[in-house]
Length: 431
Ligand code: GLU
Image (tube, rainbow, N blue to C red):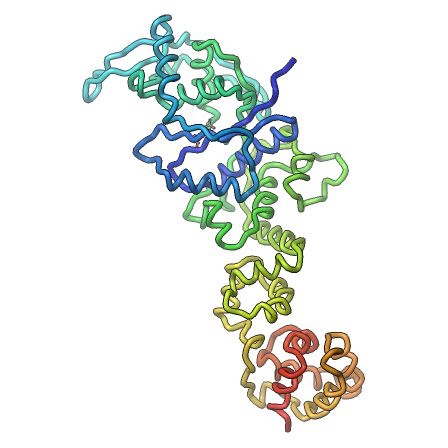
């Protein structure tokens, strides 16, 4: 009987939660859930100089916000020195590791693993057979002392002691795997399954770095990308619904749907290109799927000073123009939303044909407050506009309301502004 699937994300708290780590976490989560297993988080904080509690908090809150729930307590390598010490002493006692006097530079002692000098072959679930000749690695340093284990030793002990069955991690770790297998074999641990996932690349195929823009999940959350959209986006970086199966054209997924569809076999071998347009598109799709109330609350995060009543009317218009909170803020800064809040002042030239406005007022006046909606507004002026040339009537009506060359259509604007405000604005240009 095979052991229950258990996966892990093992972030080092030396920076904010990176998109790449988030995607690794997601794939581990998906694989565990797909197979009825467990997903845990281990904080790899052995590098005391670079690890901070702030970075750790950022990592954990990002995981929570993304909805990647954990199936066990969070562990810290910094609190596990005892087990590493015990295992190191065991290795030394059995002659598989030894204290070695380093002569280069400052003279000091380290612990080295005796390398049997063999070829290591492992089956990678994405890259198939991978073979490394470990002879050239020599006797690898596994600890500075029995109380100061190095990265590879700690990872191997933890994965084994925590019962990790599948190590799913970034391809940048693939050359670490033979080293870790050597340590594993010396300790008599079983070998987990490995899956090294392709890196996320910038559009120019270079390594994704801060030079090209934000790399932390928390930055994207702050810009107003929905957690569900980020999850969807990350899933499609290197994975796609399996070819040949029904529903392969689907691109918008919830986390639950991803669990259902996920398989490691459908992960590509080559690097995955980060595409901001795709993220924007997905964010829009996920915004569209929110309830009306959630949408209004979302827009309110960018426009905290706007009256909720007005906000609920303009939310659909705003979400039609913007992909995220940043863009809504930019619309506001560019004064693109001003006409929703204050009457514009409009030049005669821009109005072009204001002589039709008295008739527009007369026609709109007939609609009662309670019947004031887009359809009735359109019906009220439509015949007259058709008769006079639509542009001649609808242009000055729209411009009197918005003051802009470009804006939503006059019926939408009038409905949002309400009868009183609409009448006031058009009357200003009554000639
Ligand atoms: N701590 C490593 C990192 O943050 C991950 C190690 C592993 O997944 O084995 O890159």
